[in-house]
Image (cartoon, rainbow, N blue to C red):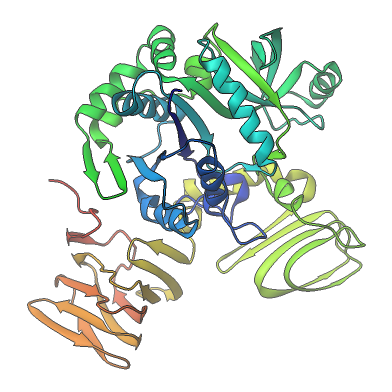
Amino acid sequence: MSPLIPCIIAGGAGTRLWPVSREALPKPFMRLPDGESLLQKTFQRACALPGVSQLLTVTNREVFFRTLDDYRQSRQSDVALDFILEPFGRNTAPAIAAAALQVAQRYGNDAHLLVLPADHLITDTAAFQHAVERARALADQGWLVTFGIQPTRAETGFGYIEQGAALGDNGFAVARFVEKPAAATAQQYLADGRYLWNSGMFCMRVDTLLQELDDHAPQVLPALSHCLAHSQVFAGQQQRHLELDSQTFALAPDISIDYALMERSKKVAVVPCQLGWSDIGSWQAVRELSEADANGNQCTGQSVLHDVHDCYIDSPTRLVGGVGLKDLVIIDTPDALLVAHAGRTQDVKYIAQALKQQGHDAYRLHRSVTRPWGSYTVLEEGPGFKLKRLVVKPQGALSLQLHRHRSEHWIVVSGTAQVTNGDQHFVLVRNESTFIKPGRPHRLVNPADVELVMIEVQCGEYVGEDDIVRLNDVYGRTETP
């Protein structure tokens, strides 16, 4: 049988789930009540499919190492990992085209490409596996197959698929795709019975996909073929990643696979299914994952409530007191607080968009930020200074770098630090420190098998995160001249 290659597409900022989902740590990395991320659940679901030995992920190169961390925690050591790393987002058509070209080259034109968004939740894995089997049967007949979720309510936040002629027992031809409807139209779709939610999951033979892209979106494939020819491949023992060239990737059309292909092709089929599916697209969807108390409230963290009804409160680190509240969503993070009406959670994206327009860091970064070498947390900052806590993984290494506008003072809290400071190389242990002047090359390495914890004090006329010149980096983050 043709090889099955699951392809996890991890893009987008998940702006409707701000302030937990942000550009540098988007929705797929959100932890659910059981402690696992949406990305981990998608990864486990894909690896559990019969016959899967290779998995492809298309994601932004800035979250590559965080993605690897999530995968490794899931302990699927028998599945080889393949990555395509985007320098920036260009929507789903270029991402899927790049995946198809690579899969055709590595596994053959008859390979089945199973496209899975990284941020969806599916609770019925047996039904998912059965749906994939049905989709593969249709794909072998030359269909581009999408998965349609049988609706349970008149939802206005999803696109819909209208079923056409039956294709045996496995599915239906797609009569048309429909944009997100108004409430009255959504109610009609629910009553009609022929309309399904568009899940954004696909299963296609690679040769069919490439031919249909060539016919209906001829500007996409040449752009991605040109980009792949100018991109670098890095291979390890059980991991391979291809870094898309930023200059040629910028020439690719910024268009979704729905607009580029699925709405134009006459070879699109749909498999109706009930999977316990949710795209976790808003805080309303998140709150549905947990049970409510007698007053209709769902709370994470410590709270003291009086006359509070039908509220969702997520505050894992800070006590929340509430009096006389109803139908609110309250999301507390160390540096941002969201208060929204429960019926308006789809509009949270406007807060994130406004922050981006203002250039505010809270759109992009959390106070705690993951890096390939570990993480840092901003403890306090003000005019001319910033105080951070750094945690460096065992054997982790920061880049050899310099800053033009700030000095840094490093203090070891625990562990052992191997330091480069200008032309000096030395080791620091607990309660020892070093001072780094502006413009001086420096590096921090953890040579031990336990975490290194540091306090970093920055002082200067500018302490923004972009004041960094990387001279050398073991994670490949230096810019090619």
